[in-house]
Length: 123
Length: 204
Image (cartoon, rainbow over the protein chains, first blue to last red):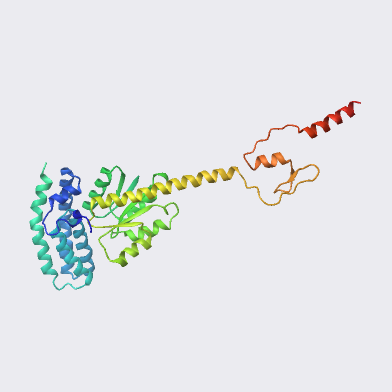
């Protein structure tokens, strides 16, 4: 069975316990990771949204894959899962429910953002 | 051990680098495949990384392509390659290993798994290094000791031997130049008696 940190936080906005384990208890590093994620976030969401508008499945797959990986590394399970749904749509080329999945992603991000802002500011 | 981490996602790259550095390894990073390849070419030789962690999906050049290039480029054949992937299909993993990866880690990774797999790589790198050193030692030894084998023509009277260049050579110089043998020259009792007899006769 795969170890728990990788699986941790799949149903959580941000699994800070798992994240702290991942960074070896280094709070400063955790804050830097939150900052890095937030820096890239707007461009990533714009890319995914544009790919859905343009019905560009490959672009959607690549954009959602990047966000899924980044959120997964940060132990942001719900965002990672929501991005995974869009990635799967991009891979299959079936973009029928993409707008709904994008709304799910944006909702998950709305919950994640303030948590990350706090984490980034925490001394 | 020197490690190159090639990962386009800044968050994952930073976690990987921080984790590996915390464990005492020397880490350099690249944010895409082309930069990773350039870094490998630039750092070639003695400073080249001994282990690379490659993300499968990267802009520029993906992890699989870098694996193939490393395995077909002289000097990089023995780099230990770990592929990072969120793919889990058996066909994908088979493709990664066929392309030349030694191992793979599923993303999101667990730090203990990362450490364990990198330590396996480190053991392989050390083994490879010690084998290479042993081979180099043997090559030096072989260069000093040319093999003596086959039929050696020797003159029945003066006991010179015919060397590879077809010259007749004293047997002691022949053996000295092809082995670690050193000769001390003396006179055996029979020759000594014969010599003394000749001297006596010449003085008489």
